[in-house]
Image (cartoon, rainbow, N blue to C red; front, top):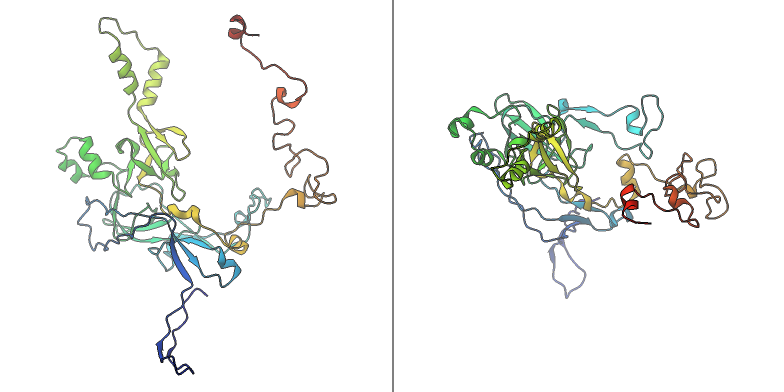
Length: 403
């Protein structure tokens, strides 16, 4: 339906005043619109070898581009899709996938009961086995970028130089076929040690390793770097910032930066007080952790040996997508959400009655639990508005004369 019609050639019109039309231009049913300032992507030529193991990837400017369609049907009128022309058009590597079957597709647990509502149906899927550990050292060539139906971000098929092993990794924004990525989770390679003279130079190490798509431990990443695919525990795979367009920021590294500032402010004549056991444990904990700020603004202390990938998760324009029709939601394994007010009395506490009425009951969940700031969901001093209950005050306020 979205393919252009075949052009008609040599059409003779019955009017004498109009000349013969040799060709009719093709009618296109899809157009690309620019939501923001858009620049054309620079496509890199695929590398035939791994000679440039330390060459930085090319810079690509990404803008917000959405594809709209001519409304030949009502479901296409409001359809909006991000432009991802660089995605692989064929099938995935079969041995790196397995079919998604069983109760989990319909939101059921192992006993068959519905534990997640509004799940069910959907198109057949094959789950891609993505490598979130990235323990294989050495350069890897990006063969292609693929769509993954199990996640909002894209995945990249990479081939190892040393073992020629294929694997899927989470693609970074701007990654294209032909790029070379590397993992430093197993340690610094020998050639990098020799280039630094046998000692760790933080500046040289960051310039050689902190590139888009490379996987590093958190203690090797410079402060202020954008990262994604972040691990929560040392020795385990990544769990944070895996959705499309998400990223985190390395805020602080090291432990005793604050302690050194305090010690520098104190005069040297004063004797240093011995640290308590709790203060020593706090310093040791800070020395082993890195401060990371997530996209939500939350700040976390993560172990310095946790894995992280440089860059931003791919497909950042995913949140601009408009499905256009309800059937496309069903294809994505999403079932309809019905209001409780529109149900029968046996299906929901708000159901039943004549017209729009929820039976003169307080707002409740489908299982009868009070919700929406109802009874038992507020403090006691907020339940009865007529009687004003004073808030509890501590002893310090009473001692200062507050009434």
